[in-house]
Image (cartoon, rainbow, N blue to C red; front, side):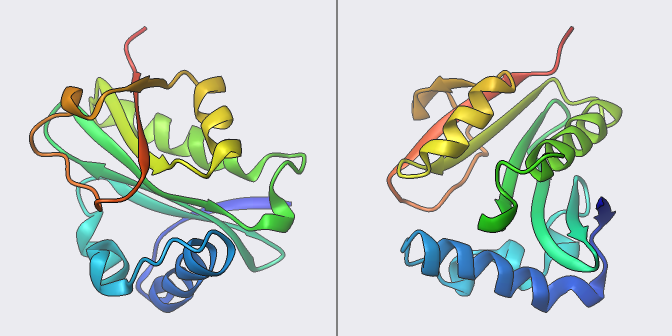
Length: 160
């Protein structure tokens, strides 16, 4: 059974190791911990949004973060699901995503943005199925920051 939990300080190292392994071992993206302040101090980085972990039988199988940009906009970050858990039923990704959207609405956000590696084709399909539309980087709010990588950028309205 999949359970979703809010991030706690004890999760810092397991989350860091989990995310870096998927980014660099599976996708060969070459990201470092130093390039990702949310992996250095997750609780602080996401304090105005939220960060959640999905576990199955006490094993970390997924993560997702919501960064607050401003009163109306949030950024979906660090959505990762263990390869063996992708496509499984029930969907780890969907549980995490639904948790984030519900929380974003409670915070009064009207829009969620995200950037995702161009090579992560399966994730693009997931985001599009869940209402995200591909946008040009020029359409991003000025406060949006992301690593300079080959990424696709998406936006989803939370209105109606």
